[in-house]
Length: 215
Image 1 (cartoon, rainbow, N blue to C red):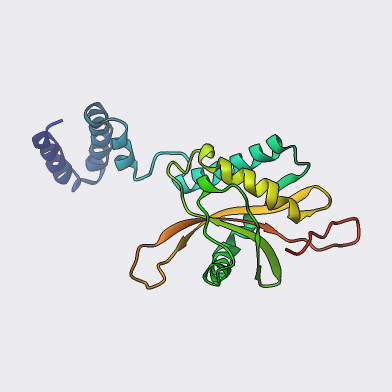
Image 2: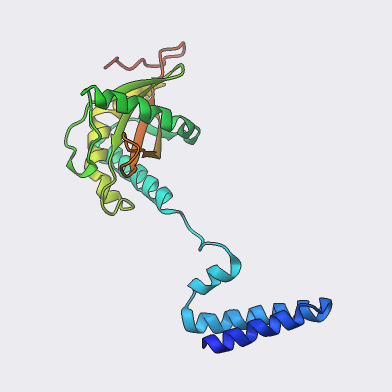
């Protein structure tokens, strides 16, 4: 579709819009016809502009979190671990405070922000937010973060050396995965997205709950 044609169509909208009923019918007809012509020339993306909505589907951040969860579940199955990963999305509101507490441990030299593709062993870091304790691991973002394979090494290390310590009721691990932006320390550098993976610590209660060892 040529720009001159689009300009002419827009002029016709301006002329007809002043007439209440005729204008409404014309505008509706115009949008349908113009949308069809734009689809022919520009493809399906034009529909997004017409409706004012993004295409349906998960955002890249949701896809990335799903990739991590897929990798973790695959690692549990592959390693023959007899516990269930129980995701609690409500814990995501604590993710920023957890990251901030974790970064203090990094500054003190007790732990690191890990690269998921290079992790072979792992020791969890416990942080406290409010009255709750969380075993926590923080990772930088790999290339192609939406692919579960990008998180395979990290997932294997976490399943073998981290999540198993936070079991409760025998075989459950309450965990959450969230992406949090880490601001530059000097306020001038670029912020970086961090993958925060944490498991809630459950202390022993009546009924056979298991208290994980303090690490």
